[in-house]
Image (cartoon, rainbow over all chains, first blue to last red; front, side):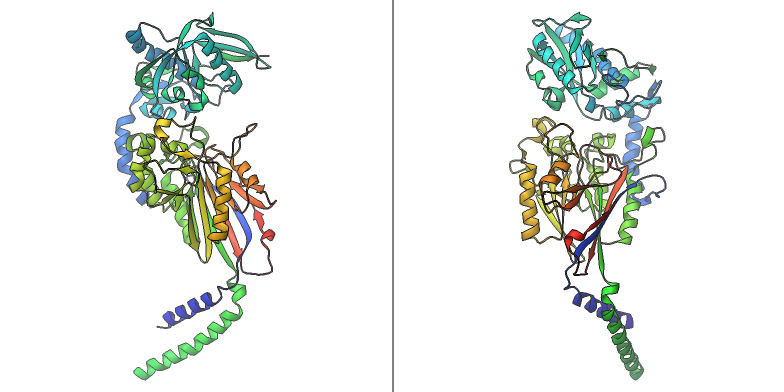
Length: 251
Length: 304
């Protein structure tokens, strides 16, 4: 009874004091790291468990090994992980493309931003492919005239990012001038059609790669980049990609 | 027996007057501050589990179950807390590929998120994919510069929302990034992108003068800053507008070790913050409101 009365009286006091206008007087800001010093909330953990176990069963068998840790931040204009991705697109998609069109894929262009995780040293499973390539992007092949390929090269030079490429070789000078550009080690013929593989995302103008719209032919392989990675890992014992000279700057 | 009760009541009453009197006299000393805590995440990208032990600099960090404990502790310390997310909730782990965002929304609901805005990756399963997951979200979405009128999301996203915590009114509006060139048209469909600065000017006017908010927060997925580019960013928005106290950002995965103080168009200090990505950090901004009348708003001190 006493407590109840005290409670009501306090409420009355608080309410009667409400009239004074409050001013913002101090702001304090910081970030808090989520690390193992913070205990796990058991009920949340228990809620996640059945979802996690279902996915785990599906994804966690070892399909290859990584000789090292590969990150898209390691390398200026080409990276080991990007080179691996672009090479995988050629090796896995070319047999499908060739069977359908009798042509070969000449080159590949993906985007640096599309690599969403590192490949850590050690066992690789399908989960690794999901982390690196979480998007449902499919491989498409476009017939591009040599003149359009020049636009693609201008884009690469201007962006100065390690967008993954294969088949195409590009050397630029310190003033961002093109010193040499080749496809399959041959100079680019403005009149020739080159078959470029990329993702449906980039074909649709992602990362402003608008030049893909200027194509002479379009082939949707209906093959997800992630599935190409998983297929490649399954037939490879140990991956060991390197930074090479496919896109470099010469001073 | 009855008489004893009466005496007890009476004496209690007398005592209470004393307590009450004391409280009233010392009121300004005791009850002088209201603290509003804003907790925020951005670009969590379906990172429900903590990173594994071999994941480089992120090793063993993050995880929703730990974030839940931290938020619970902070809420216990201050019930006047709001929990916000600045978008890109979806895409980044198999949880999204397998369940389409269901688990992300269910967990955010369990963590009692109050509000979120929409990031470009939240369109990754198409606008229908986002719409399909809405029943799992017990929190609202705000976006002032996406016009969803001709899409399935129409009426499901408000431009802003207001909250009242211990007499303090907080207005929060959302901003999204330009979708053209970032998300396939087949995914965002008829979603219209409107100019963030113009919309922010409208929003702050409404929240300040019509809604009489004490605190105005912008939940943005525009990105922190774009060097050598005229692309709109949180820093540009902050400098070009007024009456926003805090911009909580996302998209650029910018790890700010502390919030950035920016002078707005009226040369008043305000704050821009972003906590990287993947649920590695929780942002925490405390606003202390003081009842002393001799203080002006310009006297606000920012401690970071």
